[in-house]
Length: 120
Image (cartoon, rainbow, N blue to C red; front, side):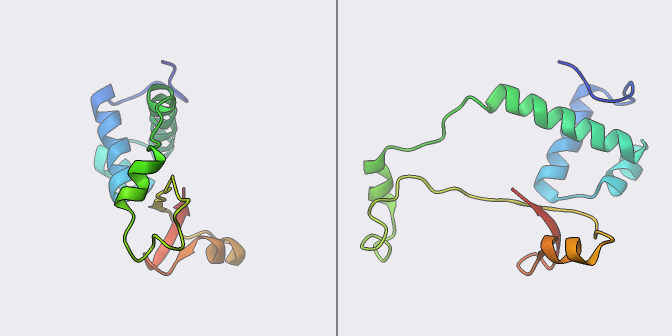
């Protein structure tokens, strides 16, 4: 698989570990760069490369459930209003650095996390 950017200073397992930490803990690129003793741009390139790799490996998987299974596990209080539900999409928020533009700050602010986040 092709890597983005300049030649890397970390081996692949460390790059994957860095990516998983960013995804799971929402660690900022600057923090990860300091922690792994690399440039912040390298963190960004590694992260994007590994996201592409994960998409290539996992993107074709289907995570849909049969409608009858979904109905079976819907909470009783939701069944009358949502009997036709067959897919629930869970979202994630990734901590980001505070944007310099006020409009962008407002657009990325999360009351739930009490931090600026990217949403997916």
